[in-house]
Image (cartoon, rainbow, N blue to C red):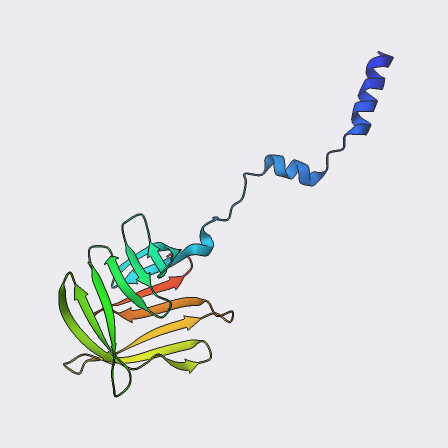
Length: 177
């Protein structure tokens, strides 16, 4: 019996278990999503889904498991592969106008579907930019961008042809409502 007591004392004095170690043993693991910093909210009309930002040589691709995908070139969206059932392939090209601003040409497949004229992006408040645009019929709209204090894009809202709805990408998770 004394040998067992001695062995038990040696074992207990050589090993200490602190509360953080116990907490780790019973912890269910990290609760934060490791992809949260790459997650954005994509909206188009009533359609709203999460997308992930993936850096590629031509900019950022925003995509998800529902095959929604669009390409942001560092200034604006230049290509949409698909957004839900609402918006199919659209490519946006730019022609610089002699009078200032740009003409945006919206193309689906090989067919140019419409053109809009827009100002350059203008700083409206310290972190916000706006671009005033109009269609050939004189319908006006505003594209918007917002950046964080560290200079990272946090929101982009753009019309991509049809002015009834704008495409919006906002940094962060979908709202729980």
